[in-house]
Amino acid sequence: MFRRTTRADREFREAQRAGQAMLAMHAEWPLPEAPGPVAAPASAAAVAAVVPDFLPPQFRAPSRQDVLGFMMRWDLPLVIDGEVHACHCGAYRNWIVFNMRDDSVWLRCPAGHEAQEARLDTAWYNRNSGPVDHFHATLEEGLRHLGH
Image (tube, rainbow, N blue to C red; front, side, top):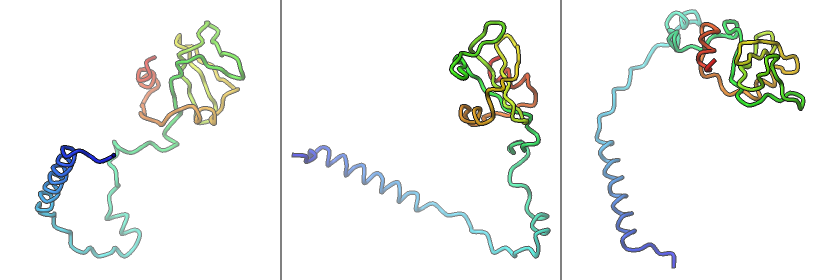
């Protein structure tokens, strides 16, 4: 009742043969030469002197001391303690949320007004933000990246 048709069997066998031919082709490629044994350095200082940094500087993430804060977009209305938060200019959506190094959270409306929001904290920011995808040298670069 659940038997494959002859055509399906033939297609399955052809796919198996093609896969085996591909594996055989890769098995014929020459393998790179293995490096010879390396003598172990005598001390940790010698290791630091011999081994360069793993990543070049342009690929390293900044340390926590180098980062003044994090920012993210918040396009929906921001609801805090059951109320929709609004700026004094009337804006209530399209916020930029800043999480500063001193664990304070600041909000910036589309008009550019900024205010600290004491009801939000770093834990709220971490629950609602995604992974960090860019680091910016200036605030203006970050705002441009987020579309403000």
